[in-house]
Length: 258
Length: 222
Image (cartoon, each protein chain N blue to C red):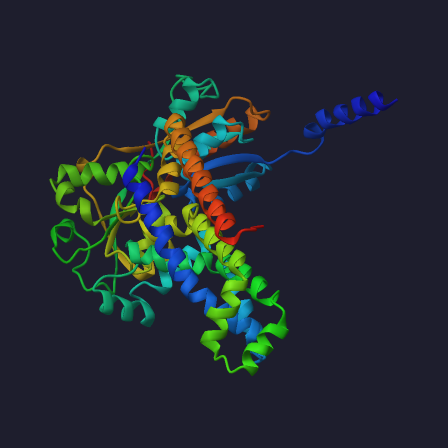
């Protein structure tokens, strides 16, 4: 009797996903936080499929997926973490030309941002050489793709050794922006997506770091292999890569892939 | 193992504990012996760091101590640099963050002392300082040890405030909990396990030493 009720319960649990559509769970890199929510709302209106995003540093999300987090799609800020999940057999890019390579959905842009009320000159490469620059905020170069790009650019400019003692390392790109916006750091190397948010746009000014100074910040997507909603995930990926959405990405500080 | 971070963590916890005890003993005595009705508000205020998530507390401190507030500007002109991203900044953050852990055991300990003893001491002419240091503190020695141990350990394990306020600068603000977090985030689980094991082992040794000292000098402890 008891066994039968357990079986019934388990049977119902299996049926539950068929009755009500569970929302797609999207693990998204922190630089997408200002960008993704309106896009997901458009996606819901166009397809009727609900999708919810969780934002964190790409490395954190990758570790969570590695340990069984119930995500369907992973939008990283780089290609390394998605590739690592593919190699571990936990994610794939099935349905695309090469199922073992993450799908590039956008490219990131690195900017130097400072508050307008700063006593230093407005952001430019010269600001990085200014002796008055006491604290420069960067995201952690060991795991944040924008942090890696920042260190690459400083190294390329031959400024890294001189600036190293003045760097303050933030957990992710949003925190790097916070360090500067709160006035504790004089300037920061952050994402253009952050610099274009209403708050930062009102409080400060940015300078786009020339693209030849750092390797491209290619942002890769992978499907978490154990998803039960593969068809819906593909719809969302197609949506993100559509011309219309890619044009919107450009307005929010990401470079379209085509 | 990052010994620089280890030494920094011990230094931070020691300095924080010393400051906290110096602050919490008079504050706890005031709360227990005082008569003003404002003391309830003061006690509530002192317990507030328990409510806020550490990263949120760290964020508020970052803003409050930053050059965009009058307090922050005052401190900056005094020290010559902003408090954030410096060891002193971490000390300030840790003292606020761990204050309830120093204060609560002391308040409980002082309150448990027979009020007849306090009244007798007062009748015999003991001033407030004498009352605290010759009566309350010796009688509540166990609470003092508990306050010190809790403050120390809470600071060693502190993470959110340091993450927000520190800026991960080796030798200045990179504590063991940050190193451990970095190792986990970088998928270096073997190193993270080593760091965690050493941290736990040393904490057990330090705690055992403190408790053993408490037993010896007290004759009867706990």
